[in-house]
Length: 341
Image (cartoon, rainbow, N blue to C red; front, side):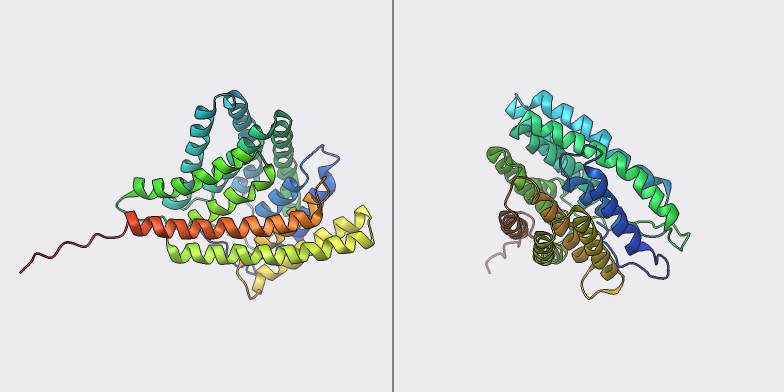
């Protein structure tokens, strides 16, 4: 799967400003547009805008519109099968396996969407009908809203280059692809089942972290991904504390919007030439945005921060360790027995 690369300042000097304004607009418009899960627009805006490399094209313009379509289809399937636990579980584990196959064997970031949206909506479905509807509507409205925001921002702050970025994929090469996929699914499925058993949407970060780690082709890439995302979680949590403390002293909505915009501007500016990887800065920014927006629900901010750090770290470590163990047991080359002299 293609790794997020640093941004070339000469090709896209407006990258940081465009992304920061996109996140700021997503935060501002969430409530007027009736989005009841406020962290979704900010997270989607950051992922879509910070992942842009090269010139803007129609494919990227259409990407946010996939979110509402998938949200409605998956939510309908979840609502129709949630009363049949075996069918429900098998179907959503199959979605997870399909997403992992796309990530590992095709090197496609589309696999993340195939895993993420069904996982989030299925966990919401086992929580309550109201949560499923709220999550579906929030996803659908976020996608429609971002389709407009992204186009407008690219018209006002366009990249300087006219080159369309072509993702560089590195598909996993193996002589036993089905076994390889089965091992990854065998790790992902219990995490998803645990989220179903607890019926807690706050645990959604666990399957997300596990998917990103399992989607890497080899142990070196998995270790690099896990380290980047764990360190990003710690950085993002620290910045979220600063933002929430500032808001506590100045509890005004414009101040929060400004803080979120400036925070995004800082992290995305570091994606030009920062010391850490682009993935680290992107995910740290995402962690900060989600923690800050989640703290405005009925949950304690300190609880949100501790839970995010613990769950993210635990999920990444479990995924990388279990897959390394299973690969050693089932995929390691067998030694031929040496005949006795």
